[in-house]
Amino acid sequence: MNVPQAFQYQGSKRALAPLILKFLPVKMRRLVDPFTGSAAMTLACAAHMRAERFWINDLNKPLAELLNLMIHRPEELADAYAELWKGDAEDALEHFYTVREKFNRTQEPKLFLYLLARCIKGAVRYNSEGMFNQSPDKRRLGTRPETMRQNIMAVSMLLRGKTIVTSHDFRDVLEATEDDDVIYMDPPYQGTSGDRDSRYLAGLSFDDFVVALDGLNSRGLRYAISYDGRTGDKAYGETLPGYLGLTHIELEAGRSSQATLLGREEQTIESLYLSPALAAAVGKIPSRLITRRNAVQAELF
Ligand SMILES: C[S@@+](CC[C@H](N)C(=O)[O-])C[C@H]1O[C@@H](n2cnc3c(N)ncnc32)[C@H](O)[C@@H]1O
Image (tube, rainbow, N blue to C red; front, side, top):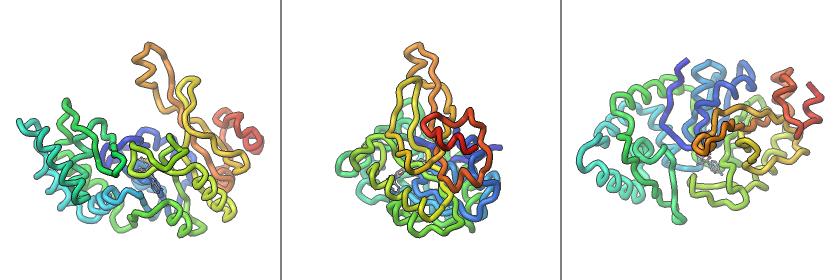
């Protein structure tokens, strides 16, 4: 199935979404996506008709506003993009910097879509003052307006009328969840010790995250987290504490481009953690997928 992409975004779970979906309930009343980014998991769930309603949230306000526009005022957004896109016009690079400067002044979400489409690898970057400072991709022109319009309309068709969009800290979202919600979390996981991360507008404290998960456990909520991972033997991200009782699953995310460049054949493995309530709800998980780190859990299946 061809699931539309809202926009290219660093850390997007688009490629991994079909695998992650296997570990979510077949039918959900509502999926809550507190670190939604480009909403890849939400869109995958919507396209596969796995949830009736959605709540997407991202602390990055222009990003959340952009998703809201895309869902609820798609024509207006597509028109604005068509006006901003410059293709390979002679002054295209200069134009990018002009739009970037205007975006940093106004935080206008329509300008943000253009920057995401045109910047290097869709990788947002912020300086210490929270100013967007990524450069334009000199080889790619950014999604053509006709393609962008089709993507925007497809996203809107999937989510309109059943989605709320907010821009809060994830803890506020978790507090407002209902007992039969299913929560998918994909927080920024590197540089977790501080709360600054140049890759996203806001980082996240590891301790705050663990406390929030503990709270969800005491409510018996069903949740899944994409958190850490490894390439070959090199692990990244901090391991979540064993007392949370999470089931740890390793998913093959594809060949590492970095390793291929260095002439090594290495798979990138991404972790998925299931809360005790979710693991119980999805039933038997093949034990080869569960790692020794959570051996106690593995024995339960
Ligand atoms: C790894 S990205 C999510 C990518 C997403 N799964 C996708 O497929 O595009 C993490 C997101 O969390 C957001 N974020 C960072 N700190 C946050 C917080 N405290 N509360 C809510 N969102 C936060 C960032 O702005 C970023 O968009």
